[in-house]
Length: 116
Image 1 (spheres, helix red, strand yellow):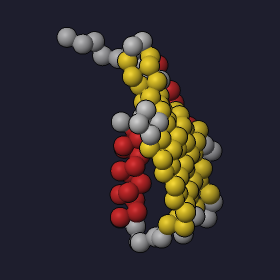
Image 2 (cartoon, helix red, strand yellow):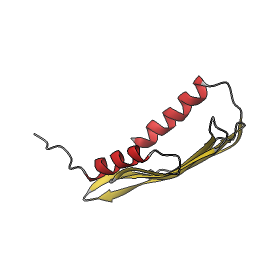
Image 3 (tube, one colour):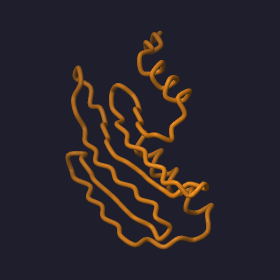
Image 4 (cartoon, one colour):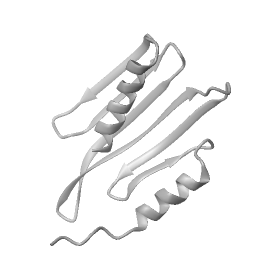
């Protein structure tokens, strides 16, 4: 689910922004649900992700690990590395506000809602 969101978010970014060419792009999607992709654009944006399906308590869970980086408006590079799995989305990066990291930590430890 998160992977689809990330792909859509990146696509929307590129549609909404001025047209930016892709310098390099690779992708591989396998029958077992594993995949990897990466690209670099002319404006310096870089995206890389690998993912797979793993079984947790007899439930198939999509897991992903990756990173993205871009040049911020202040001229500094923004770099985020992340893991998304059965424990939630866990980003790491110097540019992520502490308040967001705290909220993600709380969400990761929250109990799921009870099913009726």
